[in-house]
Every structure is written in structure tokens, then in C-alpha cells.
Image 1 (cartoon, rainbow, N blue to C red):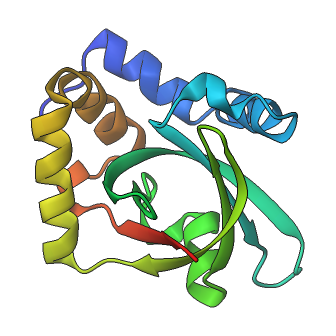
Image 2: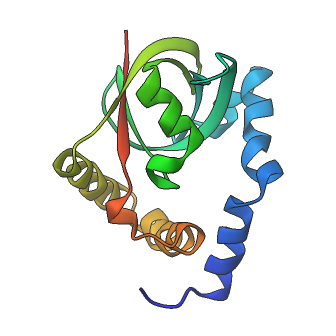
Image 3: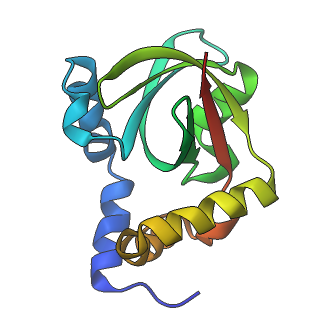
Amino acid sequence: MVSPSRTERFGARALRTRWVVRAPIILYRVGLGSLFGSRLLMLEHTGRRTGVRRYVTLEVVDHPESATYVVVSGFGVGAQWYRNITANPHVRISTGFRRKVAAIATPMTTDESALALERYIDHHPKAWTRLRGTIEAATGTPVNTLPMVRLVIG
């Protein structure tokens, strides 16, 4: 892996700063999630041990159908939200003008994830160029090995 640039290191630090990554949740919860458009979503999931509702905002990697969203676990299979959805796949999502819509979360295979990443790179080449190094600097993991999750409304 190439040494991260100064901008990538700054972005990586921001991704590891709790208040920075939690700030969009407040906007979603007060009904202003539409400010983020369709590129982000808020995932509401249940704590696997506590049963308490938890929230995380994630970038939408792919939106192949109106009822399907694909997100990536930037911090891998150890991320709390990822561990929670594998224990209980019944979630709710908020994105754009959709609020608290019931969905099922399913981890994707490596091949499915690779296809989704290819589509992301094709549709968002500038974002890919900017975000790849930042995510890799934050996680210490190549982006193409991170797990993805399919969220299907219904």
C-alpha cells in the first residue's frame, strides 16, 4: 500500500473521530436526512447483546433497484453495525425522503462485492479517487477487500 497523502491522513483521522461520524445521525433523526441526498443512508439496527436500537450513517456504494441499496463496512467485519446485522438482519433505513423503512440486510459474497465496487468506480470516479486513500489510511485495509451488505426494502 502506498503511503497516504496529508489529505488522506486528515480524512482518515476524521473517520476515526466519533463526533464527526455521528453528526449526520442527528440530522437524520430530526428529519433532515434528505440534505445528504441518495449518496448516504442511515441504518437503524439492533444491538446483538443489548437489544437497543443503534444508528450508523453509511455511503451508498450501489443502488441497482429502487428497493435495493449496497453499503460497505469501511471497518470490516469487526464493525459493530456489521456484527449486529449478521446477528439480526431486520433493519430500518433512512435515505433521501425515505424515513425508517423496514429492510433486510444481507452480507454479500466477494464476487458480488467486486461487481458493486466496479459500478461505484464507473459512476463516481472522482469520489473513488478521493475516498480510496482515505478509507485505506483509516482502516489499514485495501478497499476492495472490505465486506459489503445488500439492504432490500420490504
